[in-house]
Length: 239
Image (cartoon, rainbow, N blue to C red; front, side, top):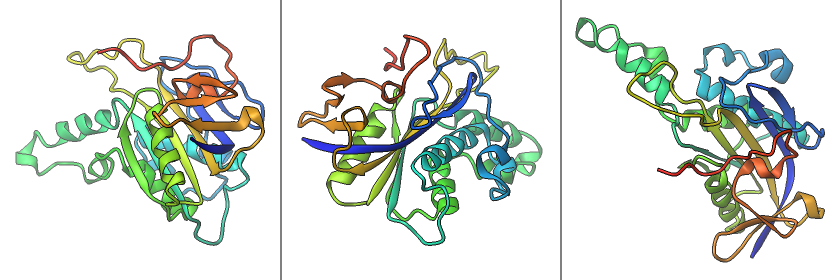
């Protein structure tokens, strides 16, 4: 058994954005995320924000809110903090947009800007560069955030980082008739985890079999770490 203290959390959905320790209740939605203006979250210190694709910006913003919640959103020195991001659809929307730019003039019009965001791990790199994080970064296939939490907990347990950011990012492609995303939730949720137990409602436990629990209750998604405005939580989709 391994325990970690949840020292901060942040989220963005179509219902707005918020932070865990600030007491903001999470409200999930299947609509396109409502991303706050960059100055609201980053002040004047994120000049690249306008260049980011929707997937990367959603994850970057939620991670920034989690770090702000933990009092770690600004630093002059590098920090041994890692980032794990989980997603089902990943950056497929950008991949498809980039692919469309390659279909003309023998590929001569392929967009270098879009190409920069055709890997799901780019969002983790943006977080690491902006916040000066030197811990491990890892993308996992995950539609509830649970696998990201497990991976982050295992990295902490192994001493690979002093703290980990673990998150869920979902921005499935819009207007693609060949793809059916159903009513999948959209947005991003991140938490900051430090080794050791905190108060009961801020302690995440990883059991020997990989089960996650908080306050003695097993959890199946990262959303369950937050107070919620609706009863429906993130749960893994059934294929």
